[in-house]
Image 1 (cartoon, rainbow, N blue to C red):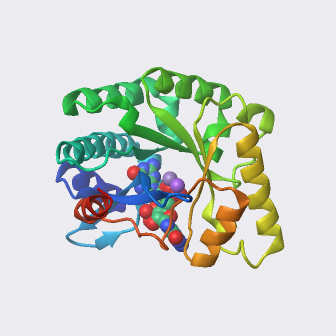
Image 2: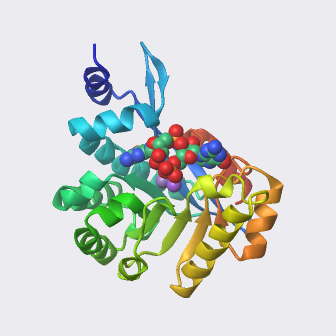
Image 3: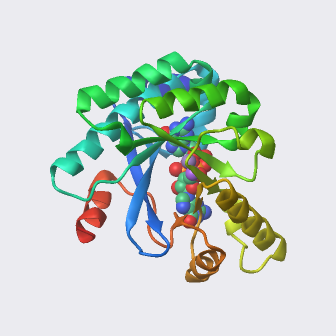
Length: 255
Ligand code: G
Ligand code: G
Ligand code: MN
Ligand code: NA
């Protein structure tokens, strides 16, 4: 069977789950957000990495169903945590360029997820990669505006890898930039990476955006980023992406 056929069945049979990676405030140390990441545990193949199946899903159109599943499931889960009395934080779902092309479907999936689960839209966010955002920027800006009107904030993901034009970036009504982890990896040893990260943070501040560093793996990364004025971090140093129970336990510690 092709991966595409297996993936279609996996979606139908409920083999996909959401994992959650916390985002931490660099000053106070609180968990202030979380990114949802899809996981596929296949009975035949074992854990399949999204790096392998997301491209197949994007080519085949199966990404629409995956996106709708993630929006609904993360909204349901976030509402459940709030009902349990855990600290309320937003959950950010990754959205592919294709979802932005067919925005009506995306917007109605967001609406349905929020209404069905009775979650306020401030607790749902969307991440769009810089390269998807810039491919058809005028359309992407329009969609970000529509999401914003619904109360859903957008972040630009993998920032630094996607050739933004700054004149275009400033027209995006986004709330956050996420620095791609490839720059964070060697930020303490490679002066070029340090200069890039410094420049991204300075630019984000000038545009009044929050800035999140991805791929923070070591204390030295954290210290360095904090000194540069980075707002939030996400990475293995604090926590890997966790199944829902793992994230619940982390939220309960901070309660
Ligand atoms: O979770 P992991 O780091 O293995 O993810 C690998 C890649 O797959 C990353 O680029 C990530 O953005 C992408 N990815 C993970 N989950 C989702 C998802 O739910 N939707 C989309 N579109 N991409 C995802
Ligand atoms: O492309 P995006 O930023 O959405 O992808 C997030 C991916 O990064 C996920 O696959 C997640 O598992 C991975 N990731 C998260 N934190 C770290 C980290 O500290 N180091 C590395 N190498 N990968 C990370
Ligand atoms: Mn992301
Ligand atoms: Na990200």
